[in-house]
Image (cartoon, rainbow, N blue to C red; front, side, top):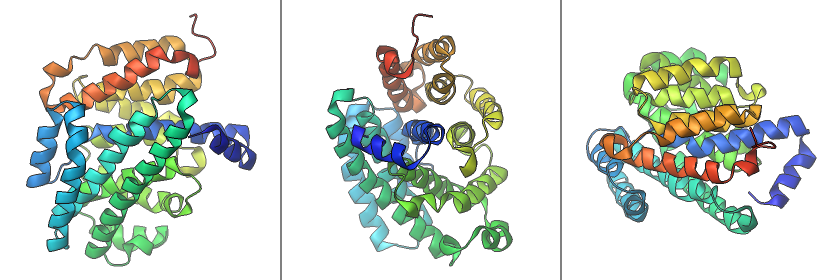
Length: 315
């Protein structure tokens, strides 16, 4: 986001609230790297293969994969597995290879960063559109229902089969909102989607190993309190994520540095968590190699640019 964008936000909200939204936006750059596609069939095979490749190859291949997945969906629009494939690939591409890379650009390149964020928003929007349609197809009326109706009529119907769709729809919507807080169509969905993602955790807390734990760590640590954030609840999800991944997921340590260490201006804790992330050898974690390589890139960015985030780095 450029300087003009931040100025507009600062005019509209008080400084304390603004800082919360900035940290929320920062955290969303990591939000989706905690998961690969988890549908059965082609999507799972594609994602599993991607996890073992380098980011450069995946970056080049994803646009073609997105087009292919959407062509398949057009031929079978009611297939929920194809819905998750097409939606999640759009969102992953936006997060990991457009917005995520833009975030690491020098501050002087804010115009290019704005341009890339706008590009990412188009992919977020497309992914959310696909997933939203898929959820509505299975549960007519759910996407326009208020929280009371969702709680009473829809939550009892949600099954384990719905968890991947709910996860990607929620994560994609949250990231689209963080990328453009003035787009109210995403902000208005936070409350109802929060109900659904909490139900998903209740049904399948071990979905894709630690995906939901890492999601809820960021959810409670980074979201403003009026949107559901609660910093006191975040550590338990961090500990669960570390335990479930046996400490081999670098992303959770980078996430802690982003949403705990930086807001608290705890430089010592920041360095500790970044070093823990860097200590993980992606070659020794082939099933999540891509995730750990991307997490390393972020960790290196933070180390080189600590002065952007801390007033005092002489500790």
